[in-house]
Image (cartoon, rainbow, N blue to C red; front, side, top):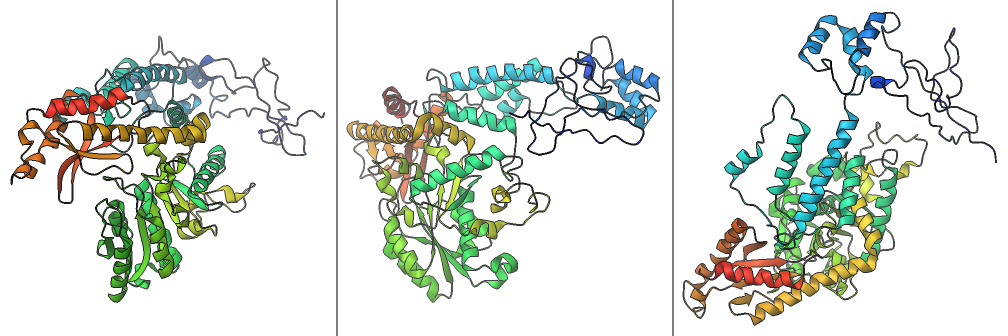
Length: 599
C-alpha cells in the first residue's frame, strides 16, 4: 500500500529564500517563530491525508513578526512578558502595559497579537468546576423531589440577590462560580418531577449531552462546509419525522419554535398560491383569508399580522364542546369569505390544543381543503409525538393528507428547548424558492462539494442553531420503541390522575381528557353544595390563583391555571416528565387540597 500523501500549507519559497522542506518530525527543532507561545514547548506536528494525486507536505509557516529581527530589544521586551501565570510581572492589560502601548505606536500594538487573548488552561479549569456546579445544582438537585421547585423572590429582592450590574472590571473564577450557583438556585427547576406548569418538563440526560455538545461546537446550520455532521443528521431526523407523519418523501427544516413553524407554513402557502408575492408583495395580491379554529394557537393571529395578511382576515371557526373544529362551520366560513370578495388560501387544523388538548378531525378538514384547493397545515406542535405510539396515533388520523406539519419534540419527548420541526410534503424545492436569497458569501455555486447540501437558504434565518443533535442522541439511546413508551407513560399518568379526580371529594373535571391535558377545578369545603348560588362561579374562579400563589411561595410544585371561554379559572395538569411516579401524582392532588382547604 502506498504511503499517504500530505499537503503543505506553507507558501512557496520566494526568490532568495530556502524552501522550508517537509515537516519536522515530532521532537525535532521547530522553525523560528512557530508555536513558542509563553515559553511552551512546540506542539507536535500533524500530517493530513490529501485526496490530491500530487504529493504534498504539511509544513508550519514561520510567523513574520514585524520588527523582531530588526529590533532585538523589542523581541527581548516581548519575551519578558510571555509568562502565562503573570507571576513577577505586570501583564498585558496592566496600567503600565497600557500606558507603554499608548506611547510606542503600532509596533507595541502588534506585540499583543503574538500570544492568545485567552488563557485556555484557566478556562478549562473554570469549565470543569462549572460543569460540576451544573451537575450538582441543576441536574441532581434540580430533579430531586425533596428539593424545592422554586425559591420564589419578588423582582426587586431578586435583583439585589443576583447583583446583575455589569462593570468595567472582571471578577475572579470563585465569584463567577458562586454566580452560577445563584443563577441555578433562583431559577425555576423545570426538570423537577413536580413541575407541571408548561407543555414541557423533565430532563433527559442523553438529550442534555447533545445540547452541551451543540453549544461547545457553536456552529451554524446553514452550510455543509461548517456543519457537515449536522446537515446530514438533520436530514435523517427530518426524514424519520416525515415517515411517522406518513410521507415517504418531502422537505423540512428545524425552526425556532412551533410559532415560527406555523408562520413558515402561512408564508409558503401564500407563495405557493401566489408566486408573484415574493417580488411584488401584498400590493399584487387580492385580500387573503385563512382559517383556524377558535382553539388554535395564538401564533396564527401573530403570523397573519407579521406577514401582512392582517388579523381581520383570520377566520376563527367554531368548535364543539371538546374544543374540536366543526367541519361544517369551516365550510360556512370559507363560503362567507368568498362572498365578501376575499381569496381563501390556507387552513390550519390543530392536533393538541394548548388548554383542552383537542384534536381537530383531520380527514373531514382535508376533504374541504381538497375541494376548495386550499393549503392544509396541521399544527401538531403539542400532539405530534402521539404519532410514535401505536396506541394513540389514531388521534392524528388523516395527518398524512396535510401539506405541512409543525411538530415540537421538545414538548412531550423531553428533548429540551427548543426542538421544533417544520415538515413539508412538497418535493419541488418550495421552501428554497420561497425563502432563498442566494447570498454569494455563503452559498457560492462553485464550491468543491455538492452545494445541494447547503440547506440554509430554505429559511428566512441566516445563522441557525443546531437543534437536531439532542433529538438524534436521545433517539439513538431510547430507540423508537423507547420514545413510544415515554408517550404512553404520559397518557397513563393522565388517566390515573383523571380517575383520582373523579374519586376525590372537592375535585371536578372540566371534561374527560382525550390527550394528556387534565383540566379540573378544586372546590374548597366552603363552596361545596352551593353550585346554585349566584356567587358560586365567581368565587370558584378565585380559588386556583390563590392556590397557585401558595404553592409557588412554598416551592412545593408548579401547575398552570386559566379561564377558558365562559369557564372560570381551572387547573391544567400536564405530565410529560418520565421521572414522575405515582407518589408524585398523589402528592400533586394532596397538595392542592392542603393549600386550598381554608378558602
